[in-house]
Length: 310
Image (cartoon, rainbow, N blue to C red; front, side, top):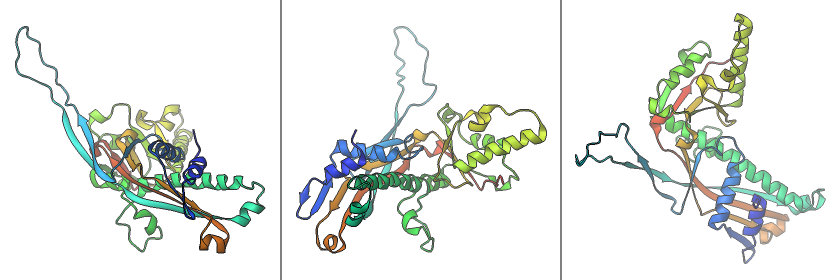
């Protein structure tokens, strides 16, 4: 499989005038997006959808429960099980990642020309990390006074969507972290979603502090805590998400979280033109778009205002 650096260089081979224009073909676009997703724990697990149109609908198909009926020979009672169809709307927002490398850096670095590939891979890895951050924490209503306004306003992320339409457990009334918080949150989800596919999504620090809390309980009260409780509260595995804040935990099936991208991924590179010549630089820009959506909000829960474990 081509690396992101190779994809960028291959895309840059299409030259018009002094600028290299690279519109990736569908196969290259899929590879580029997949390698970007591989930079994080969570995004590898969620559902990925590629579309040609920047906005549209994704079909959601479901089947009701308890649809069996008694069989009677040589009769047709007219009963037929049906399929429930709905749609989820999406609207991809365009973003870009520009960077530059000075020719002097390439000449003087021990990596030489390989440094370009190293920096390209670092940039695309960071692109994956930043995308996970916006998938989770994006909020188009971010106040303009916020220091991260330009970043967070790009799109509405999963946390905002779950806060607005999923099941919310406010832990501000709990004096300390405990298993009760996990049980109370799980209890808000309908039983049909408690099917072995759920995952707790939490920051690494929160997961480590939860382990410390349990160890302190053992030391203070004696006894032993089963190993599974550390990594699987309420028998549900955890997924470490560095982009999440320590005071929140999400509960859902990762496949319930959907990332929509289009094939319209452009990678451009130029080493010519007045600016490049005067500054002796190489300029790069990666253009793409995305929309993080949720298939079933009723199958999501969030714990907010978690007490500190310090």
